[in-house]
Image (cartoon, rainbow, N blue to C red; front, side, top):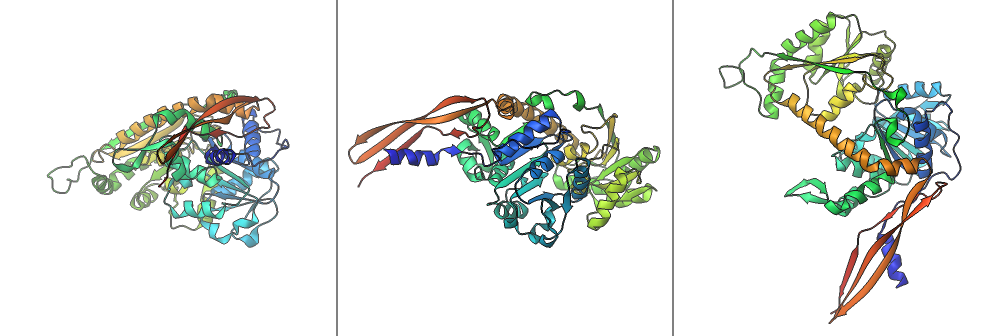
Length: 487
C-alpha cells in the first residue's frame, strides 16, 4: 500500500516553494503592498505578479531581481528597457542594458524580447518577464522559446497588468513558464470543452474553488492595494472621460448606392481605409487646437502618415523605424520635448509610463480590447494627477466595433472582480505571513470482483495555519478511482 500512496502523492498537484528562506532586504521606499508582494515572490522563487497599471511592477521586479543569488535577465518590450534602467537608478539599483550575452554583467541585466536568441539562458539564475502577457499566444513562437529556454532556471518571475480574466490559456501559459503545471495539464484538471469548439474551455462547476486556490498558490492579483489589505489613498485614479466622435462616411459602400454599416471584419477594415482622411482631419482639428501633449493611437500606416502631415509638431513612430529612433522618441515625449506622438498600440501601448500626458485620441479602433485598455492605461494610471481625456474618432460605417469594445470592457470588469474576490482571502493571508494551507490525506478502499480490482479513494484537505509563513506549499487533488482488469 505504501508504494500506491507514493504513486498518489506524485499524482497530486504540488507546488513547493523554491525561493529564499531568509528575510530579504528590501528598499524602505517601497509601499507596504509592494513590500509584501516582493517578500512573497522571493519566498515562492517562481511566481507571477498580476498587478494593474501603475502599481509599481517595475520596482517590484527590480527588488525581486536584486535579492536573487546570481545573475538575472529581464526580458521587456521595446522602449521599456531604458525606462527600467531609469527607474532602477531612482532606487539605487543598477540595471545593465544589453543586446547579447557578451554584454552581460554580474547582477541585473535587461534586454528586449526580440534579442532572446542572442543569450544563453543557462548562464542566469533568475529571469523576469516584464509585460508577460506576451505568453498569451499559446501557439506563438516567442512563447515556446521562452518556456523552453528557461525551463531549468531556478528563479522565475512573470509580471503584467491583470491578465484577461476569461483567457484561461494565458494563465496556463504563465503556469507552464513558472514550472507549476503545463497548460494541457491545467485544462485536463480543471476545464471541460464548451460544446464542439475545441478552443472554448470553461471551468468545471465543482473545480472552480480549487482552480482559484491553485492559481493563488503561485500568483498574486491586485487592481488596487486594498485588494490585499492595504490603503488606497495614494492610488486613487483621477477621472477618465471618453469623447466619441462619429464621422459620416461620404463614399458609398462597394455594391451599394450609399454607405452601409460594416457587418464583417473585412468590411470594417474597408470602411476604415475609406475614411482615413476624414477621421485624420477631425483628429488634427482637435489636437492642433490644444497646446497640451497628446498621444494619437492609430491602427493603419495610412492613418499615421496622414496625421503626420496634418499635425505640424507631431512625430510619427512606425514599426519600420529603428529601435534607437523609437526609444529616443518616447524618451523625448516623456521629457516634454515632443508635444504630439503618433503611433500604434502594438508599438507603445504596453509597459511605458506616460503620466506626463493626459490627452489621447484613437483614430479608429481594432477589435482588441486588451490593446485598447493597455493604450488608455499608458496615461490613466496610478501617478496621474490630472483628469484624463480620450477621444475616439470613428466612421459611422465601421459597424459595432465600439459596442464590442464596451461589451468586452464590461465583461472584463465583472470577471476581474470575481477573480479578486475569489482570491482575496487566500492572497491576503499568504502575503502577510499567516498562511492557511492544506495537507492532503488519502483514504483508500479496495473492491474486488471476478478478474478485476478497483481502488477507490478520497482526498481529505486538512487546513493548517502557519503563523511564521515558512510553510508555502499546497496539494490539491480530486477523488480518484483506479480500475485494474486481469486477463
